[in-house]
Length: 247
Ligand SMILES: Nc1ncnc2c1ncn2[C@@H]1O[C@H](C[S@+](CC[C@H]([NH3+])C(=O)[O-])CC(=O)[O-])[C@@H](O)[C@H]1O
Ligand SMILES: O=C(O)C(=O)Cc1ccccc1
Image (cartoon, rainbow, N blue to C red; front, side):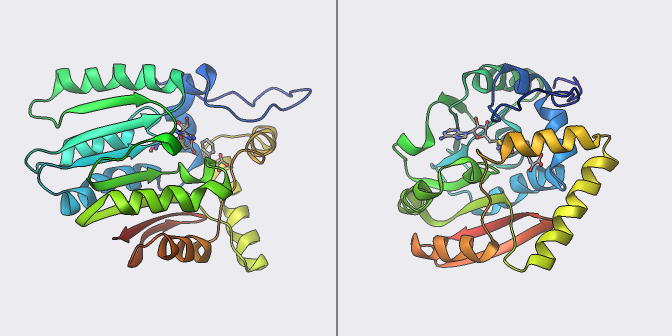
């Protein structure tokens, strides 16, 4: 994994452009996500453990919005179920290119890993195959809000009995006091990880047009509307959470 530190927003920018998953972001992404998302390493590692409980023989495990394939690597490390394969999908060409390199690296270091296919494409246009695990690890928040229900409904339709969707997201909170407290604590987390006030402010303005978090209640309602029968939060650290949704 690239060890390059994230300094993308360290210098004052005359105008902060909208955040995009381009080559500059790809270069620093492992550092950026670890220093920006409290609990990220715990979520990724445990996603593999969870997936192993839901994986069904001869089915697909999807990693949607796979970025550099951290979730895909965890799935391949933990799932041993017969006939499973991983399909990782991302619409950033720069992410997909580097993801394939990292997965080749994983293949050369470990034996008996699940087969994997990395697709460069829009998850909104994907034809889903029968799946036992679908991971949306901090991806749904980048999908246009009016597309989210239809996507979750298609995922629900593709899920096999015994399978699960694992959905991780940044949350907003309807209670203003709770929202402010957890947002301030998230800023303190970023500061503690070496980000300056300028970096925090410029990153915030870069993502505010492209990343639209929902509340836990909105997630639950929409997942039920999409046909899921049960929604179980299994992790929360500050304003970041991960949910298990059962078909
Ligand atoms: N419509 C779309 N179709 C496909 N990919 C998309 C789309 N929209 C956004 N993406 C992709 O979703 C990913 C979101 S990052 C996921 C982290 C990863 N899951 C991880 O566990 O390391 C989250 C973050 O950076 O906060 C990016 O790679 C986008 O290109
Ligand atoms: O950086 C932030 O404040 C975030 O909310 C998370 C994030 C992490 C990586 C890319 C975009 C957003």
